[in-house]
Image 1 (tube, rainbow, N blue to C red):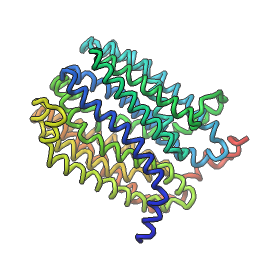
Image 2 (cartoon, rainbow, N blue to C red; image 1 turned 180 degrees about the vertical axis):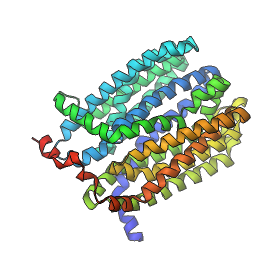
Image 3 (tube, rainbow, N blue to C red; image 1 turned 135 degrees about the vertical axis):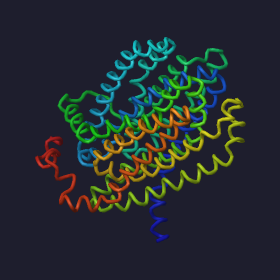
Image 4 (cartoon, rainbow, N blue to C red; image 1 turned 90 degrees about the vertical axis):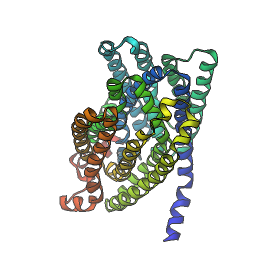
Length: 444
């Protein structure tokens, strides 16, 4: 048993190390910048920054759902002889997606202006940098799919250095503002894209329109359910910030984000493990069969949840000291009671994250949509009750209830993968789209 565990750890040490470097630098940059901006900016300006940031996260959530989470499964089946074409087609799909979402952001400005005009310039800046953000996120995921975690780590170092250096430059020049910070995102993403491209991982070149259309169809088949789930994911993790801003004001949203930032390191640590492991799990399932998925789901759920429980216990036990050192603002330091629902929601979501990796590797995505739909319904109902009695703190506890409902639907599906597949009498690669020579058509 110990020998087998050591063998696995030795085999994965390079991948995990680079993944931790990648996620660690990106996480550290976002963590530190949140601390700096919460300290440097007035709370209402910081709250405005948080709302623009959540819009960016919403766009990224749809990108992850529609494109990124489905790519490992597609590459494992069709990418052995079509690597460059699939990579290039994926880059064009992401650029199209980035352009369309930037148009939607611009179209939303008149609607937001009904509430306040203070978001107009920041949203215009977000629309300008959004395509660069989308391309970097795709290139970064592509590094993991192609087993080039070292390239992702190098780009992440450049990304973090650009963000931090730019932020200190803006502060030193007295030019720090929400629009300037958003434009800084674009600069950092552009540098990271260049670093990955120069390492030969990503491909941006001409590709046949038929190839792009084929990839869009494959992504849609696998990701359409995840796209619906992305709304639920955003509401459950980030959508509470604009809701709190509407209920209690921008300052409350800024305070909540400052508190939530304490959990960013462990959130990004689990994300690093997910990025490193998911493509290899998809390859393993193709090689040895779907039975492997159920075993992996059990161990991944236990591992991801255990890590988060330990981390949250440390944060909650030392919360007052940590907040005093980090922020030095009494409005934030005195809000430690809000950490409990944030920690519980994160712990429950870590169980979902660990178990869902097996389902993603198999391409079984409908359950994500159903679980998020149930979670949204639970969130709306709980917010209507708790928000009225507890104020914006009730929104956080409603979020916990939403996580419980969504995770409760995911776990049985992940742990019962083997039985479900045996009952259906088939596997994913027997679907109609794979029966008619798709691979041979692509490789010609």
